[in-house]
Image 1: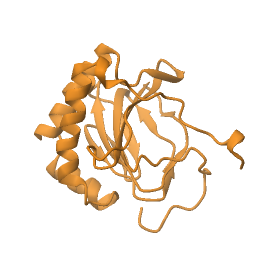
Image 2 (image 1 turned 90 degrees about the vertical axis):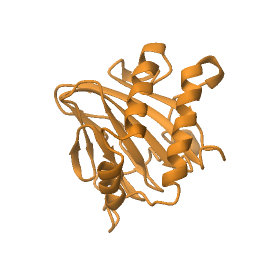
Image 3 (image 1 turned 30 degrees about the vertical axis):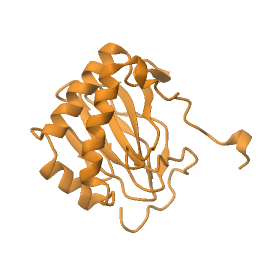
Image 4 (image 1 turned 90 degrees about the horizontal axis):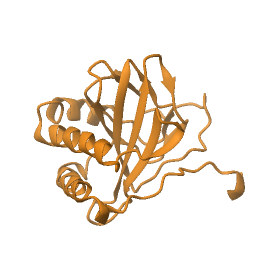
Length: 192
């Protein structure tokens, strides 16, 4: 596939200087990255994040608060993908400060199961599920997840899916790596 036909992420990178709360949010993410920077995405990390960093944990609660404020202020998931119910926003590209994680938000809203853009995680993903409706769920590699975390391992690929309401998927990508050129139905890596 040549560069002219490659699928890409059309969201632009946020200008943090315009949004003081976005700057504070990135700083809080950096605190979190200092704790998880040496952990490998996958089902074991997903279980650990839900056990140790789930609802009630200060990081999780702060992320939810900032994301909800950011929606109101216009700096979260500001780029429409297929309309107002499926949007994406790049908060930060990988930097030394973010321990080389990128920070991205995706707003998804649907009562019925809705599938977003098929993609792969070359180095895995850490994804904080921020419910805007208490019944909303995001489908991860281990199944449906309400409030909490998913963490697809390196090489995994899927459709992001939502059901039962609105949520924001706050995801952190090691080295910012994501591919929209994955093939649905291709085998998953052994260690999903």
